[in-house]
Amino acid sequence: MASLWRAVSLTARLFTSQRMLWQPFLLAAAAEVLGLMLIWLAPHPPFSALLAPPIRYVAGEAVLHYPAHLWFLYHAMRRIHLVMAVLVGGYCSALACAMVRQTHDGQALSLRQARTQGGVHYADVTLITLAAWLAMESVSALLARVLPRAALSFTVVLGAALALQTLVACAIPAAVYEQLRWPRALARGAREACRHPLRIFLMVAVPSLVVIGFNLIASEHQVRRWMMLTAPEIALCMVLIRLVVHTLADAVLTVGVAHLWWLHRGSQAC
Image 1 (tube, rainbow, N blue to C red):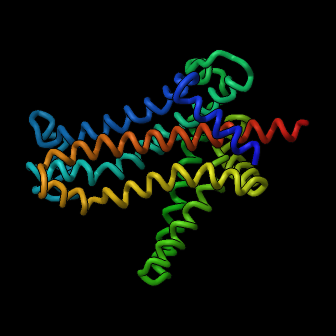
Image 2 (tube, one colour; image 1 turned 90 degrees about the horizontal axis):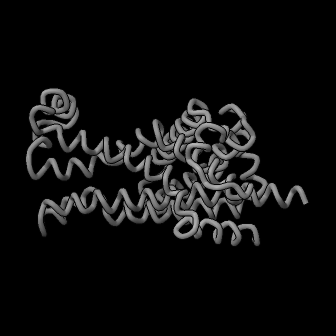
Image 3 (cartoon, rainbow, N blue to C red; image 1 turned 120 degrees about the vertical axis):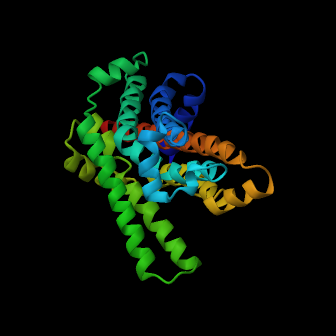
């Protein structure tokens, strides 16, 4: 387990000496903020002419008016996060992996060099992210349908989702570090996870459980209740907190798994 603690230590440096590693994750967060801004501007002219009709068609007229619109902003955040994770988040995670390689090679951290010389291919990492999301959604939906609605079913679905996420966590590092196309990267990442299941599972599970715990505590129903008990604007605070939690978790998970990959490679070379 020494490599796990070493990876945790190196990941902790993300918050201090490796602060430039925040750049890819801040870019992903900025993309999500852009998506949220489109929802925010939808009721306001002149943007309403273009943005309001699709929202009205999907969710109804009420969500375009205060205070329901503030709750709808929080409600739509999950879908915006998923869309941006596929379109932008996978690529930004790959850039972060390339920058982790720079730290292990003794190079200066450079986002530009990671983009141009880091072996990051947008199409492959985007397809990896999409395939991973589709697999997790399909497995979760299948288990939720066949299992009884009880605490046990939630535990099984949660365990299955974490196990599947562990299997695909190394796919993006595999695509970046070994220059593999997305199907082979998924297979190579799963093989790496099977070789070191406990270490990678712990690195994946801790930030993932933080996100899941936050989503359970600050559920859409609970946020609606808080809006009624305090002020509708509390939904905006929860949007900000949720964005911070997701960004922190993505950073810890991505950088931690990338460090583990390099530590495992070093131990294999010895």
